[in-house]
Length: 313
Image (cartoon, rainbow, N blue to C red; front, side, top):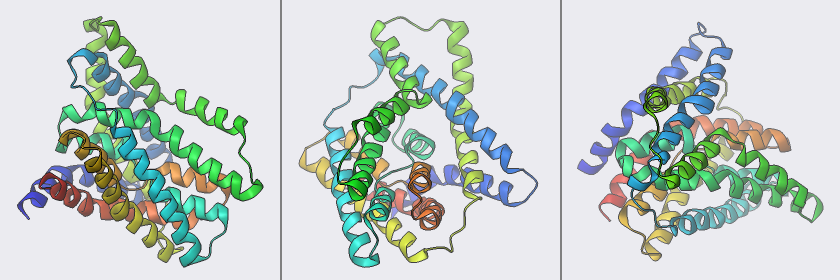
């Protein structure tokens, strides 16, 4: 209980910022465009500035066990298969809907929530592990669901579709900042002060801006449509995925920090990317939107609980 209260007290201010954003948007005094602009600024400017500056000091960062990718994405693959089975057996969904349903059970909000919670609860030393997952997350999981959907529709996979996904990932500002910062760090050149100071100032606003923007964005969705499906997705996302990833991390004998980092990421709420996929494939938009709101609310309790449990394991 003490462990849960400790991690909850660390994570609670972050979720309060999400709640603040939600309340501001629901008040009607802040147009939807404000939240969108704040989110774009946090995602395209403040967060990349923080990550580039952190990774530019690569030589001083703790080393990362690359097997964490096997633990995290191996867990994603297993849980994705479980999600498809649940969608087919419990809800009788077609192949496309099964794929979107399953993606909701594995695609975490690693950027807006993951970076903030990892930095607060595990410390800055966990950020290289988180960044490594972020670099590969969209490419691997978007490719996975694209293959799944195309196979359900046509019985084949398009290389052109993979290329489009890869280009989108590499031009993503978060991924680009991590890669550019890492390359700068390998070069061993210190950042000039006139660059380092503005990046530091922008980085200080990355976490609060992104969390408030997340809350404002969630206010646009409702939780009524497809509630049973949404709850099933939340159960898989917040319960099954962190358990599977933690078991794989233990089986691989990952160091404690990497184990905690990947399990934390697996325990997070569903990311907005899943809703983008639902819109693209015109399937389960209502349940996915509801799942985003519910999983964010529920993860304010389940993520500290997961952290407390794995810290004592």
